[in-house]
Every structure is written in C-alpha cells, then in structure tokens.
Length: 167
Image (cartoon, helix red, strand yellow):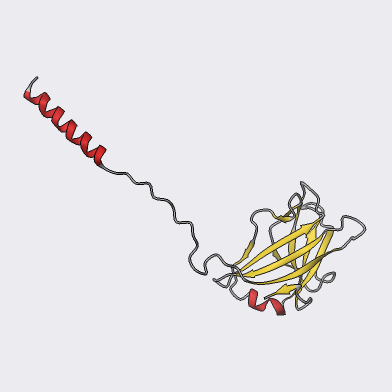
C-alpha cells in the first residue's frame, strides 16, 4: 500500500466515524394551539326555512361566526338536499320574498353533505360585517342548482329576523 492510499483510507475512516457519531434526532411537530387560538365562540345563527314544504322540504341554519381578527365566517347546514347537486347560496338584499339584488354569493351547498362545498366556512374579510349583522336588511336564498334558479329554501337574517341562537 502506498502512502497516498493509506491517506485516503484514513480520511474516509474519519469521515465515516463523524457521520456515524452524529445523532440525528427526529423532532415531533408541536400541534397544540396557543391559548385562545383557533377558538370561535362568538356567533349568531338564523333559520333557513323550506319555500316548498310539500316538495323537497330543504331547511336548515346559517351561522355567522366572529373571528379573533374581526372577520366573519359563514357556515350553512341544510337537510333534505338533493345528493350530487350543488345548491347555490346567496345573501340577498331585503326580507325573504322581496329582495332581488344579490349582496354576496357564498359557496354552493353540496347536496350530498348539506354543507358548503369548498370549505366548511365562507370567509367575509370585512371587519365590520359581524358587528353590523343585526342591522343588515337581508336574507339568504338557497337555489335548486346552478342552472335552475328555483329557490328551495330561504331565511331572513339581520334586522329581518330574531337569531335562533347567539352569544
């Protein structure tokens, strides 16, 4: 063996020992929530009634949640929806049965689950929306499908109805 080969073997051995002596410790991710984080405890809910009780009889609730960032999350839960059909949900100006101007288009309600399709919540980033909800002159309308604008359920919100539950 030559001096050059012995030197290469020596360097290789030192490098190998260094790699083997390093302790690679796997750290577990911290999954607990900071105090107060992720908690939604301010909400107002309203009833959504069937517009054709003898027909599909779609009904449920709309809940407005206030976040710690003063944003508003909207959650809809419906019963008797049609499976495999998306039901558009829209907040419309005025009391149910009178308004025609759409104020806000929410996510479609998935007929298979009765909940909003894209996410569990629709985000309203306007930081004044929740606090002005009680004076809002509006209602929510649920349509039969994206291609059929027949309203299968609606419910007054804001100044047009007393909340079912709020805190």
